[in-house]
Length: 264
Image 1 (cartoon, rainbow, N blue to C red):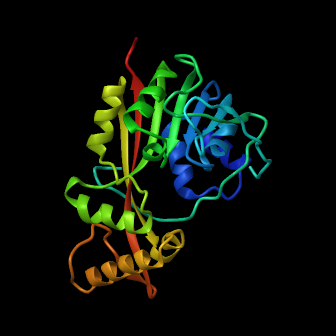
Image 2: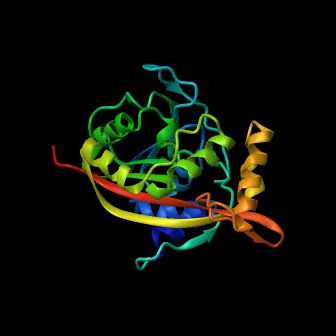
């Protein structure tokens, strides 16, 4: 009998390998009622849809506190103690199908009753959804005891903080800074959940596509110079750059955390 992951891959096309990996980590079940929180639309809800009973995707983009409403859902095609390293493949955003719905809502005040969902997810959005502590409290609140709260975030070691965050803010002046695994674990505990599983992945990705989103070309140039200097023996940036095929690449560390709410 095909695994849940194999069934998912039969129902969707061109899902990036790192999205598949996160889907595997969530351990979806056909009985799951899933809620996904995102700042903008991401690929995770559609990737989960074939594997769960229902997915509700919350988009917090341009939401003021207390406002909610439906969003149109377009049809679309649907480790051994060592941190593994994989190459980055930019995700495609997928549309929803009959087992999904989308709403616009405030992640700090979700319009759902306690224990509504069995699986609550957020992929690379937590620190943009609002106050992370309050967002996690809401994610835990709407998750049933015995369910899972799963978050994926780019993280950094504590010692990389100043320079690594400086690079992020050169690319995106509004970037809130990278989290740490210890910090996320503490916030989840304070929100009322304990971490059951943790996975770290080192992801190598090309620099230029990442810089394409930078609003300030001078900031992008500063990042290029910093990484070139590091490759040439200069100060470390925390980005672990190297040249592959004549192109600059750098490394991000991603963390997946699966937490279970405490019994109420």
